[in-house]
Length: 239
Image 1 (tube, rainbow, N blue to C red):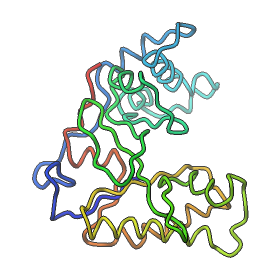
Image 2 (image 1 turned 30 degrees about the vertical axis):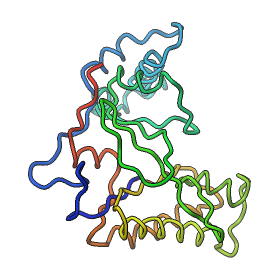
Image 3 (image 1 turned 90 degrees about the vertical axis):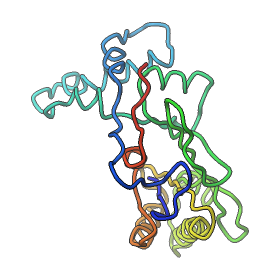
Image 4 (image 1 turned 120 degrees about the vertical axis):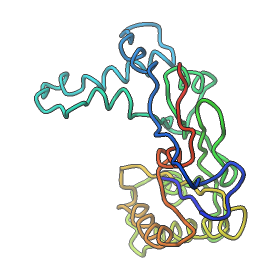
């Protein structure tokens, strides 16, 4: 999720453009070629691994013996709608960004910035999760639930009995947004997993945050895909 601020006062690169919308983010034709040429057992490379992933995903219903339940145009979805990537543990290597470009991804969200930062330009747009102040001492932490989970309970599932974890998270998110609304108005990016940590503390905090933030007239809450579609150009690399 990313939160975009300030519809009226735009930076040179633009947050939300007026007039014709940006082009819809899609995977390039090279992606289909990468899928069809994926070779199991080949010497692993970044591009080959992405190709194998796409091939496995395209055949997922058949491989699991439920081919009759495969949604209409599932393979088309795999080829053209999976346009972004975030590395597990935000762990990147020197070949990752070249592989993403060669495989036709539109964006990556695996990096970290010292504070809210604009997406980089290039064949693969790069979004960075920001470090934001959190807790009584305002120590910086990555704006992601897992990092808060580590901060609050050493990554050990702990009941948030008094709601302290939730309130700290909510306060940190609100303060980070307020700082941008009162400052440079750079998009604030937030990352959460589907896994519920500390009993769902971070999802509850996010829900409370977005209920307030997304209702503000100067704030627009969108996904990375939505950001690219709105600002354009969002055409990924040709491979």
